[in-house]
Amino acid sequence: MAKPKIFIADSHEVVRLGISFIIQCSHEFEVVGQTGSCHEVLRKAEELQPDVIIMEARMTDGNSIECCRKIKESVPKIKVIMLVTGNDDEAIFSCISAGVDGLLLKQFNSEELIRSIHMVLEGKALLDPSITNKVLDRVKNGQPKPQPKDVSLLNPQERRILSLIAEGKTNKEIAQILTLSNNTIKNYVSGILSKLNFSNRAEAAAYAVRNNLMAYSKAVNDRRGN
Image (tube, rainbow, N blue to C red; front, top):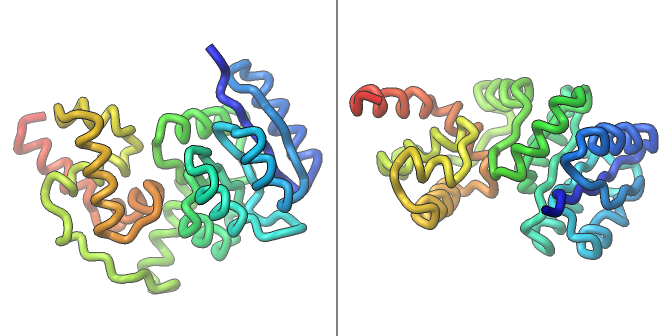
């Protein structure tokens, strides 16, 4: 069975080599290439068709956020994990808006990196806990002001599915929990993202936490005796 392919993009060679070493030592993935140039990432993505791109959010020679948007438009199946620093609020929110599949603080360890790759490959929302807290704090403080999104637009089933997304469940896992087909869940998720004007599962997961939908899901489970 072919190993998932990983491409690495970071301005610093020592970082690229470190990430590559960790991935190769795991024996679970194949590093198909790396670059220190933001301008090369899209071309390499189209050429190599990696399963995951691990990319620095602030590459020195270009706009990583815009590059991510172009990758998602050109090769939407590619998962993008963006590496950010904890104090770079602008990059964090811009990455979420650009549709990244995961945000990981640069101070990760080997286990966290490998787990993060697995999560995005499984379709799970990847948001470092400290980043989630930062998102929620910014929302509570009113900066930046989010576009109005009303949870009342969602029906009870959609709310429960959204809460399961926030728990990191894949479509397959949600389908098993709710005894529905994978296609039905896929349609529900697309509808949720459309209704609330989200571009990705990570943004939806943060919204679920912010609106206390985890408590909603627990209440539903309690009523059902789960």
